[in-house]
Image (cartoon, rainbow, N blue to C red; front, side):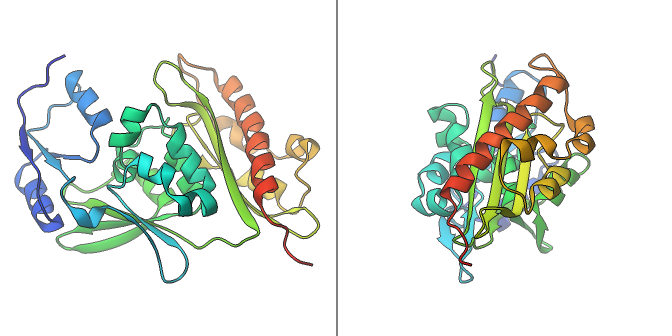
Length: 291
């Protein structure tokens, strides 16, 4: 379908972008635009103005922080994330999630900030951000704020970003040599999104058991989320099929959803299968802690 008439602006700075958002009630941020433009073509939304962030250089780039962690600009594209060597080596689940996202054209346009802000429940990257316990930095004229990614995802169902706020970057903490991660996905062939995607991040002890263990799922639940009962059941155990089968999934069952793509029961089954696959790969990558 043809887009309705809309004003367009491509500011050079964050101050200018926020001023445009405040001045034009209902204006939307263009941070890649694949999902937003699709919604506009389908006439589900009709914003009076699009504020394109592509010219704001402060929102781009991947840099190592002084504490050994990583800062990723909100306008960094998924293909840049997938191809970044530092992310591939230290945050493998994030690189794999970015690489698994739909097709090359979308990966070249879609950005990390836009991906999270849009709140697609079948998006791949939120699960990886959750297992790395990432934080978001958000800018507004009244000041900046930092929020954990799990809090942002939960809040986005109700409030999300204020009309004059822009995500500027994501911070990932430094990872130990004994820690590694992986992402596994079953793709919805109609949309390219995840029917179920699972990210894991594990620490391996000297005896081969799992130390700190984080598991997050996307596509199978109403929004990307950690599975704390499963994490607790895996911690300190050998990563075997028996351990996974014995994990406490009961507390997670109510979170799975049914739709035209799949039933909740099948998504629960996929989550177990993909968790095992992702754990197997992450454990094989992680170096054993010295005794």
